[in-house]
Length: 427
Ligand code: HAM
Image (cartoon, rainbow, N blue to C red; front, side, top):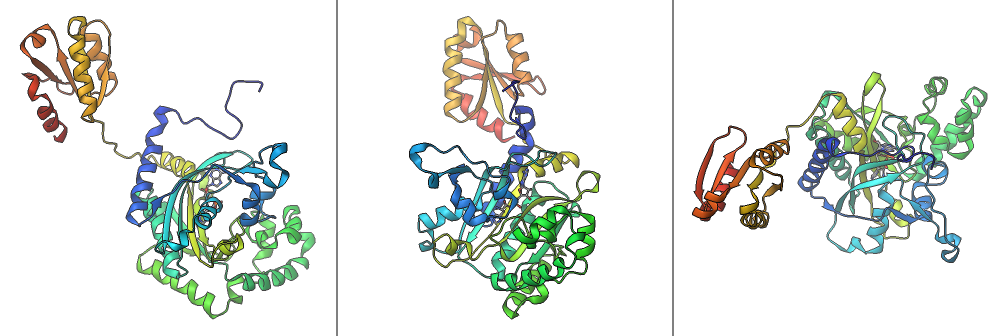
């Protein structure tokens, strides 16, 4: 460590930057509740093999970005840990481990997950990021996919992102058999143009050909204009599933673009795959979130034959987008009370302070000399009311209440204080 600074690709979110973050967390929890998702928390690290088996070798997330923890001799190499790069694998592991398929289905959970990916840091791309993650188990219907997308849409618009700034990219990846057959066709097509492909795509031609569809390279994209299309190779069931998802979205007026090149960076998806994007600064597309169906994943990890579908929305990017669009929510100012005293009345003031805390009020207190400086400090801390206890109040069993917004004040019996505050809080 040459300098005292946070590690590359990580950030501190200081108290004065917390407003939007807390707002986004709050809306996330509300929307999850609206849609029937219960909170879950899983560890920040898991056995590395869990991620390898679910996200898939050959993906960037596993091959290039996984934070492997140096394993201890006594743990054995097969027990190596990794910081989680995403939330789904750990939640699926918990679903299997705790036999949650025996609970009433569909089983719906949400989590705010902090993830770690050894990415090249840039705006919107960090080595530590947070996602709002929704997972729905035990329902293989198109409705479940549409329900997840609706929840994501509701979250993004409720946090304050204008609907016209959002785009939903939609694709279907079919079944694994359909995908395998398609990959062969795609490979055949690309092999004919191998030398024209970007170096990255040439490597992927053997490691993960489907991901070439996702290439940002312009020449690759031109080539792909003539490539075979995955959904063209679908059987009846996959076609119907995809059409049904679209029909729900149409009923709900959620606009979407069919994007046959959307393949996602994680290998566990089948059928529905989607991303919410925004034009972002400089008109550059940026993915705010994404998800899809992952029916084979639970069995692949040794669990029951239960389907799953879910979504992860990047909170870091959502916050940056709200800032860019100047969408600051109106926050409720907390109802905070200051207790003002002098050395002679301090004991009484401290007792009052404790009483207020016990009744759930936000408080502030200072032992500064003089009412004036205590009131000034209270004002700086966004206090609504000040309770003044001087010698006269102490002698007469009263308190003086001062409204810091308009400087109005009145003296009341101490025994009436709580009733008075209750009324004031409701105004
Ligand atoms: P993902 O597309 O890899 O999906 O990530 C979801 C979102 O997390 C991205 O769209 C982006 O907003 C945010 N994100 C990803 N990486 C970074 C990064 N390095 N820095 C900042 N933000 C980032 C998943 O992770 C899946 N687990 C989603 C899912 C849940 N699918 C089914 N269930």
